[in-house]
Length: 299
Image (cartoon, rainbow, N blue to C red; front, side, top):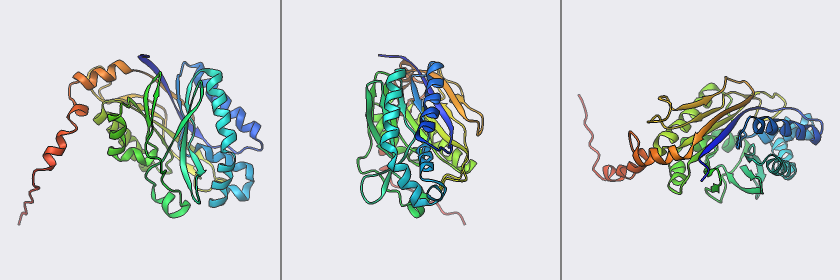
């Protein structure tokens, strides 16, 4: 198996484009930069595809429904571009998520690409309030997907999904060694919720979790006007890992790539014989939960 895997997490800003050629140049530049630093797995953020809404003009991009529809309209061309770049550079790419209409309402979809082309997609499972109440973006109907690649078995938990442990646990039990958590948050508190979630998932599943955030202001784009965060790659704080679990973190709101090289063998060793055995001991919770809950009231 491929043991050493270099991962690049993007802190990515939305830009205004006058043409698809401009968008193509940006994505090509970003992919080339990461690949040039040795990255094998590239992770773009949640709602990075919303910059495609700029093709509809200012009025469309500033309208919630208009921005969703316009971004979705250009998704096939964007997917083709990512597939071509993955093949050209021999890398795996989780493209920036964005709306895809599978029915009357859109899902929030991340598409995964490899050197051989498009591998599949993961739709967000649990919507935040903005998606529910303002955008009416709906959960994906296909459930979870495990990507079995030469770089390892990879799962995707988009932003809010990373804050719900049973989703990542199902992926981990299916074999996931790397969890990708693309995010889009307008507040530092929101960013930290995803960061804490990603770190917790790395701890309890004794795996690697990768957060790639949207950053910067984009006043022209409805729903993504302000974005904050920093890219991070996390592992379990255990033998052979950093004591704080932080493999790499970028600077706050600084566009660019954050890279770390991880060992799949270390993941396997930690799960089998770590200082603690969270992954193996997970099922013991069920036995403890079967014991009646005691309530003690103090006067």
